[in-house]
Image (cartoon, rainbow, N blue to C red; front, side, top):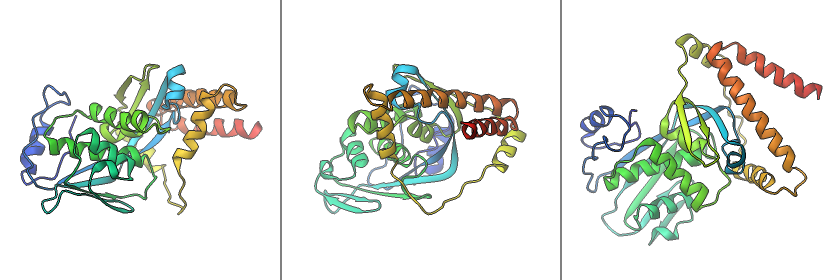
Length: 295
């Protein structure tokens, strides 16, 4: 596994060579070079879900197990961290600007929890730059993975992509109790076209989907994405789904469970179709659309 997330550094070529020459195994990862007070840049990719979206929520996979098929894209979110030398305050730049005395005072929940988790409480400047608008293609998970990678480099602690993905999940799902799943964090950290299963215990097993060059080119050639200028908050939609899945007394509880089971089935069909023959995806999509119209 190429450790693509780390870092812009004066000795970048030497560092990149070291990271790329080993497997993503914590016992084999080298200790990052000393950064001192130098700037660190890390980036992580956005993703597109191809199947199984929604089954990575704990409210579903803890009962039925989850399945996700997704791919990362060549659009990135970059994080720049720079230890401050003039004062001890925390400066955070995103859609807004924050200047606080202690990390615990930050309004930006993801940055606050990441800094506190790594015991960086003062004297840090953090800036984020994204190729896509905020709240797009798993941006919260992408932001966390890039930030955590940079913080690991700053603290000179080795973390595998799987470890950083799980660290990001812990922050969003456990510490912040956000109604999110695990796909965004894992896709940002692992960077590939991949499928994985989530057990009822939350354990993630992932494998790369090896597509032939012809299948990959045909798939990309027939895939189009458009930004239509509107934005929405995914958290509100996911919270609605999560609440319905957890509350058996709600009238829509059974419907959400049935829908997610069907989404999981469709995700598996899409993966099988893409592996077998790219044109089968069109037939699967046509069948799904046709059945909805008849209903």
